[in-house]
Length: 236
Ligand code: FPP
Image 1 (cartoon, rainbow, N blue to C red):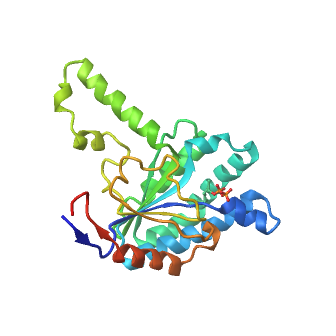
Image 2: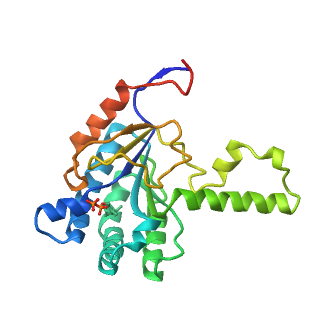
């Protein structure tokens, strides 16, 4: 089945280039992340305005724990201050926030803030904003395999009954449709352990723009590029 696209239901973004943006201006890397929050605001607004229903942002990968301690600390502080500062605006825009990822290594303070933003925005009906935090696709798939293997081991499930749909249901994204469009800013053309299973049939778009410079117009341009693509799902 070949389909011409209109609007993607789900856009997922790897927000890359904050460090380079800061370095180009003689600033510390964390200042690039602070500036990146402006782009998050712009893109959330653009997604809600254009009618995109799901927006996933890769905000902190499991690998990011390996960054210098002061950068990790700055990001944790930023996540907490974003919850405090952005929640009222997100509620007024009808944005519902969900967090995907492990959460095990976050401090109690960060986890409390993440729970707070999920609870306070739970009534949002315009846009689902999914924040991938301490997220790694391989560990997500590994966890799913482990859970399914546990069901087989206790006789609850037969190996031949394991289906693709069942695996999808064991992922953090069980309630979320697969992404139609994956954007990675800054010119890098990699998935970096992001939604490997879910992005099987996604379209990809790799603008050169560094994340802190990414505007509403850049987001709309990505939607136009998506609309011009033809999705064939492996069929002619
Ligand atoms: C990648 O750029 C970006 C990150 C690891 C962090 C992204 C976080 C934000 C934009 C902060 C706020 C987010 C939310 C959702 C509140 P990089 O540092 O790898 O850039 P580089 O490749 O140029 O070094």
